[in-house]
Structures are given as structure tokens and as C-alpha cells.
Amino acid sequence: MTRPLARSARRFSDRFALSYGQKLFLLATLPLILAVAAISLLVAAQSRALAEREIAALERQMIAAKKAELRNYVTQARNGFNRIYGMAGPTDAEAQEHVKQILSAMIYGDEGFFFVYDYDGTNLVSPRQTDMIGRNWLDLSDGNGVPVVQEFIATAREGTGYVTHLWPKPSTGEEALMVSYVTALHSWKWAMGTGVFIDDVLATTAAARADVEARVQRTFLHIGGITLGALMLVFGSGLLINIRERRLADAKLKALTQRVFDAQEEERGRVARELHDGISQLLVGVRYALDSARRRLDAGDARAGETLDRGMASLSGAIQEVRRISRDLRPGVLDDLGLGPALKALVEDFGTRTGIQTDFSTVVFRNRLHNDAKIALYRIAQEALTNIERHSGASRVAMDLRGHRSGATLKISDDGCGLPGHVNKAGKGMGLRNMQERVDQMGGTLRIFSTRSGTETGTLIEVTVPPSKVIDANELDLDSQDRHPPEAAPAPRSKGKESA
Image (cartoon, one colour):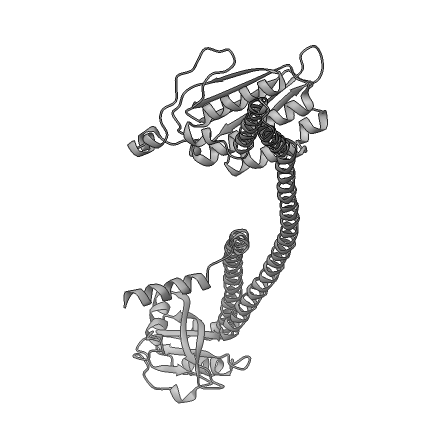
């Protein structure tokens, strides 16, 4: 049961695994999306907060204007009956009736009216809701539970003030929010006032809030459109860069493949020339020597032995030539004794063949390089010596190999004519390209220093192997030491010192 689930999970992960380009696109767009989202939320919050402050200020101003208007209405009403009230006594029923008539006649607008309640809660004036007149409403509460008439009376006992409450609109009978201004006629124990419905104020503020929300939504849409455009631009740029990089990679791969084919053909041609010019000629000489010896033996000539000796000498030369070609293709000493002896043999053979004075030195570090690093360094040394032989005109070559904490370093120097300026800077020569590619494959560094002016001329090639290509001494087990025995200590510095 566990294996099918694991296979299914693996197939699912493989199906939805992201490519390098997709990961790069996500890495480029995710911060942009997060930043835009944060900016959008911040802009929306700031816009709502600013709009809410403005709406609240507008609402306060409109309610303040209505309160001032109510106070004006009450002041005008009192001015209308102030003479009557001032001359009447506390129980003057005629004066009270006259004032009631005046207040009942003072209606304004579609909903405005004056009301009067005595301190016991009985309604005395209500011109737009006459069914309330003469009844006690002390326990009347609005839809929010506010005891409206009690609030009127309490405010009047204190002098004057505003009461905010719900009240049925005379035109519709539905409760709406109302602000009332209440004053007192203390000698008669009356609470008189008027009110104004502020549902228009609420409607105005609600419309303002809706407009703010619409603007915030439009801002979100604009930001989203800009973000989408930016993402499309990033995606398009990434796609173009990806296509361009793929084309460049394909071109480099084709060029590399062609160089590999050229190198293979060059190596085949070199081996063919070695076989034809060396071994083939020696073997032909052996054949003629054997044929001549056979004829002399048939004729009883005493010189047959001398002819056989010459044939055996030619055969020995052919054997040595085969060994040399084999060593050039893959030196056995590199596998048997390590990089140091292989490089030492390479340098000594180079000096013997070319007559150039050679100097080889090393510090023993006991075969602690990975096999691919050994091969790379050996091939780089071969390439460098070949270039020195063909192009430098040097009279002296020095090679130094040593290990250290940060890896290993191979230095090859000569006193030749140096590299041309364009090759020294760009490294476009075939041999130098081969060296650079081998160094890149093992993650190392290649540095080339060349001088062509003055009395001192020459070239220094320095190859550094990274620590990842050096085996820790603790990891060398007995079996590895048996296969790769420790190398000899460095010899005195003359023709060369043994390597590690």
C-alpha cells in the first residue's frame, strides 16, 4: 500500500515540478506581486480613513447646521408668544390655550412641527400627529429603547438641550432618526421643542461612503491593471531572454561539439601519423631485415646473425614507439604511481625530446586528488608543453605542483617569447580554450601571465584546483593506500622533483 502511494506522490511531484525558467519567473514576480498587494492595501486603508474623516466632518457640519436651525425655530416661536407667557400666571388656562394654538399653527416644511409635553408626560401640542394630544406618553420609547418623552422632560428641567431619537415620520409612519431641540416653560411646567429628521444627512453620508468604496475599487482595478502589465512585461522579457539564452546555448553547444569533433579528428590524425611515420617504418625495416636474414641463411652467409640483430633492434624501437604512443594517450604511471611521477616523466621526456632545460618540483601530498582532477592537470600540462614546444622558442621550462589547504596548484613557466596581446587578454587560442574548459569542468581557476617587452619575456600558467577535488586524509582507507602507494620524498632540484 505504501509503495503505490509513494509512486503516486512521485508522479504528482514530477508532473507539477517547476522548470528553472518557471522558478526564475516566480522569483522575479512574487516580490512584485507582494509589493503591489501591500501598496494596494495601504492605499485602500489610507483612502478609507481619509474619506471617513471627511464624511464624519461633513456629517457633523450638517447636523450642527440643523441644530442651529432648530434653535432658531424655537427662538422665533418663543418670540411669538413671549408676551402672552410673560403676563400669564401659572394657572392661566386662557393664556395656555392661546399659546397652544400659536404652536399648533407653526408647522414648516413637509415634516416640521412643534410639540409640547407637561412634566407628567401628557402631550399638549402635536399638530401633525393629533391622535397623541391629551394622552400620557411618559413611558414612550423608540425602536432603540430610548425613553423619548422622559428625555424631553429631563432636558427641559435642566434648561435647554438636544435629544437624538427615533420618531415616526408623519408622512410615512416609519421611524427615522430625528434631532430635537427642547426648552422649558417652567412656570407652566411645560417641555416645548421642535425636531428635524436627519435621514437626508445619513443618506448623504451613505452616498459619500459608497462613492469612496467605488473609488477604492477603481483604484484597485487601476493598480491591478498596472500590475498585470508589469507582469506581462516581466514575462515577455523573461521569454525573450530565455529564447536568446537558448539560442546562445545551442550555438555554444554546436561550437563545442564541433571542437570536440575537431579534437578527435586531430588526435586520430596524430595517432595515424605516429603509426605511419614511426611504427610502420620500423616494422617495414624489421620485415626487410628478416627477409634478408632468411636469404642469407639459405645461402649459408655468416652475416645472417648481424641482419637478425638489426631486425631485433628495429623491433625493440617499434615496441618503444608503441609504448610512447600509449603513454601519450593514457599514461600508465598516472594510475600506478600518481600525478607527480606522471608529470615528472612527462617533463623529462619533453626535455629529452626537445633539448629544452626542464625543472620540476613538488610537495608530497599522497595521491589526495580526485581522479578527474589528476587527468585534467596532466592534460593541461601536456597542452602547455606542446604550446611551449611549438610557439614559445623557450630555452628553459619550470613546472611546480603542490597541495595546500585551499586545494592544489600547478604552475608552468617558460622564458619564451610570451603570448600575443589579443591571446593573452582574451584567451582565444585553441590550446588555451581546451585548458580553460578542463579547468571549468572541475570548478577551478586558470590564470595566465605573459610578458613580451624588455629583457624579461615569458609566460606563466597557473591552475588552481578547488578543495572539493582534494580527498581528506581521513578518507584514505587501507585499500586505497594499497592501490596507490605513497610517493617518494622530493628529490634534489635538478632535472625535477617527484610529485604527489
